[in-house]
Image 1 (tube, one colour):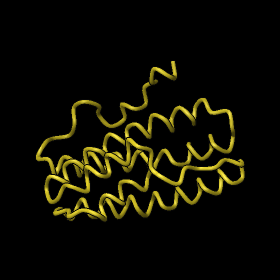
Image 2 (image 1 turned 180 degrees about the vertical axis):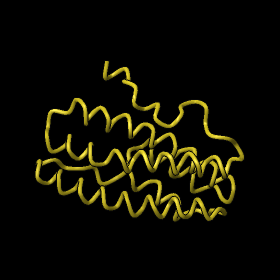
Image 3 (image 1 turned 90 degrees about the vertical axis):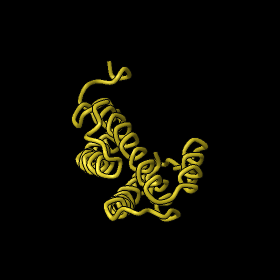
Amino acid sequence: MHASSGPRALEASQTCADKVKQFGQRMMDDHGKANDALKSLAQAEGVTLPTQLDSKHEKEMQRLQKLTGAEFDREYMKMMVSDHRKDIREFEHEARRGEDPEVKAFAEKALPTLREHLNMAEQTHSSVSGEGRSTTEPTGATDRPTPKQQ
């Protein structure tokens, strides 16, 4: 997911949990820094980055913007857990198998923060959903190779 879609959804919504607000602020701060570094890298590499969300993420944004309170909190945090798991898999793949040294270094540098975000997202999701930690994929499970990596 694009880093900007989560914070935009949070700003446009009525969250009721302070933990969700704190998580959203942390995402805005950390992803803003990462996006600035990515923009610099892209410019140096001669790559143009997208300026808008893709249709999938735009639909997710629109869906979240219709939610309020505890329902928003649960759905937003569920999305953040899922997105961070996916991001970690993709960044791990790039860090291990990437061919461009600059992009590979960017991925390696970002991974500890992404893992921290996943841990925060899982804890916050658990607290707002009334569930224990997700059993579908425990923290650290992203260290196994994905089908693309094999």
